[in-house]
Image (cartoon, rainbow, N blue to C red):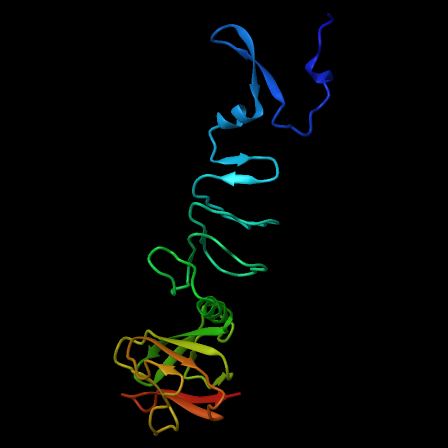
Length: 232
């Protein structure tokens, strides 16, 4: 029998369960055969290709996109860093979605209302302004990407849009409470405002559709600190 070169052997593209591999058993210096099932069983992996299905026997961590054409039947955990671009349904024994608070300690699937609320909030436009101070005369305004304020501005006139969220981070040192008012020397406008009048931390304004065309922001300790808010 002539020698057979491995490079000349035809390529087997579809391995069936009844196929087997011929291997050299070094320990006993004999040639043996191994089935596809036993070969896969011996691999140090938690993922088994059973032909039409891929079986994951333990927890799976996927750092990039996962595109699945069929069903996902999970006995371990599936943890989502975010819940976006979900085309079909998700049915698992446990569901842990970062940012979705409405699930129990066992990670049970959250209610549809919680998922919708999470997605809606993640899509809400939310701008952030950082407030400093210039003496006792001015707030200074900046934003993380220098879009609204390419350079730091003192007491700028603001233009805010209805239906959007604005977070004022009051880093003015604790002595300059920020209050959104109905007029320059009027009372606090609290509709949609969280922590109105806070001296430190965040004052959050979810601008309602009913907001008047003009509001004001002021330091409650220094009347000169502040300006107009135009609602559009």
